[in-house]
Length: 231
Ligand SMILES: Nc1ccn([C@@H]2O[C@H](COP(=O)(O)OP(=O)(O)OP(=O)(O)O)[C@@H](O)[C@H]2O)c(=O)n1
Ligand SMILES: C[C@](O)(CO)[C@H](O)COP(=O)(O)O
Figure 1: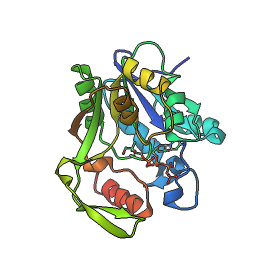
Figure 2: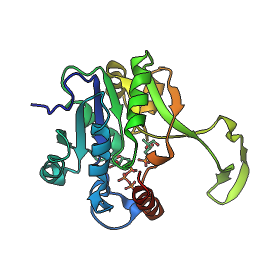
Figure 3: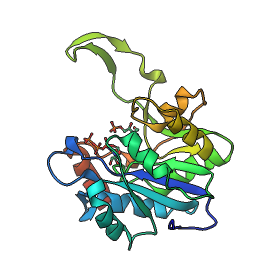
């Protein structure tokens, strides 16, 4: 039996949360590390659950922690927890397989983007609902970008005007995401990449600086600051 949030909602949110967090340094799996005294995953799920369109949330947890994650999230929101895989893509596929009949819009959202505002969940879902098969939140790139050889010698300067930094939640018509995962080969770093390989147009909508991905220790420190400031 899959847990539901809003039975009249039309959105399922998949939360890959099975990563180790190697770049954050030694410690518990990243989704379980603390921000303001609570695990990143709790922050992420709380904000997803505050988005009124959300019908179902499926979390892909580290396989060894599935029961602990179920217990952790029970007081936060009704969620389904499944074991994740060795790569993010496999974790998303496992969560997608657990979505019940009903929601025709599926969002994929990193637990590591713990402070993502509910408004961003709603705006991505609304863009899919309005007829777009695939929608991603993006921000402009603010640094000058260089192509380098072996990470050391500059080969050239890339025109950044057409570049965007891509966030989550990424939103899809359910059948489009399912077909892209069914056809998936080697793992890609995001779900839009799989959909692009199927020739499906992907729409960009404005992202949010609060949806930063907590990847390195500095990101966690920044998130602590943002949380204390009311994010
Ligand atoms: N096998 C994996 C790997 C990643 N993720 C999830 O995918 C999201 C984005 O991944 P990232 O931020 O790169 O997390 P990690 O893989 O944990 O980071 P690292 O590469 O530093 O270990 C995270 O919520 C992470 O938990 C997952 O569900 N399953
Ligand atoms: C999905 C993602 O968050 C979009 O920016 C990103 O691609 C995850 O990448 P990572 O290498 O797993 O951090």
